[in-house]
Image (tube, rainbow, N blue to C red; front, side):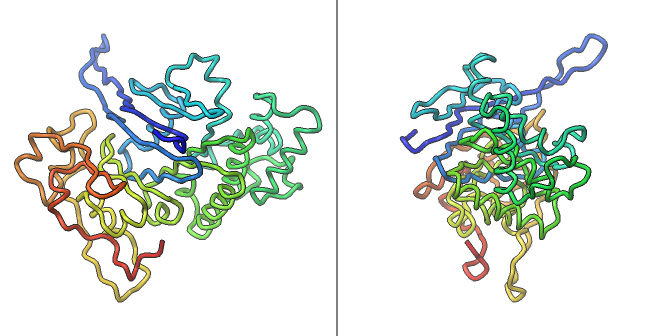
Length: 341
């Protein structure tokens, strides 16, 4: 933890019990997030990426305590001091929620259809006592302009807007209380490709103008590459690799990351890359394999991989990985020619 650290997550876990029968007998535990450690510096964007079901969204919601973590610690810097968010009671937590907000994945279900744009965006302002009377409308209009909406939209309901416009409303709502940290949970996955680019560019412009810090959750590596300063790769509730974006795309150290990168579309049709097709199924978080969770699908796996969990190690400067053979393997990333930072 340094003076630049805005968010630090230590050994975060979220387990869900599986119960069966009339007496709800506990038969298993789903390890949705299984010991997550990460840090985010002020002003940067950390991209959290992985397959569907790997625990990305659960991790983001646990960090904000939208759902309660099973164990672990989350620290957020407020007024120069690191505050342990996971140790706060409900009353104290309410007082700091304005500093960490969330942009939700689905712009259609995340907005109340019975509320106007004015009501939606002003709700966090009123709830946190940040504006009163005419100040509320003035602030809402300012936020609408900031995200590319017009004043004529003020009294309209969500059904009158397109998906991209709805997501802009959601972004304005998240920005209303002037947060330091924004957790963006797949904010463009439900949008058309052309609209995705507009929303991503908007988020980058807002970050620069408002000095925001993002935890950007996504499964699309092309999106992650476009917006992230650093990337954290997650597999079945655990991080397997973190590095700066360009470093990870060019020189991956984990076989899972290599497989994900092989599926990234290349802008140059003359560049041919072998698509790595992972065999088997994603590990069951209720009954994960022994040793390295990825070993049943890994083409480089050896006996030790099924017996012993790999350590979290820094193989290159600021490039961390959880793999027994990270120093030996020479994995393929995105080629220099096709890489566009």
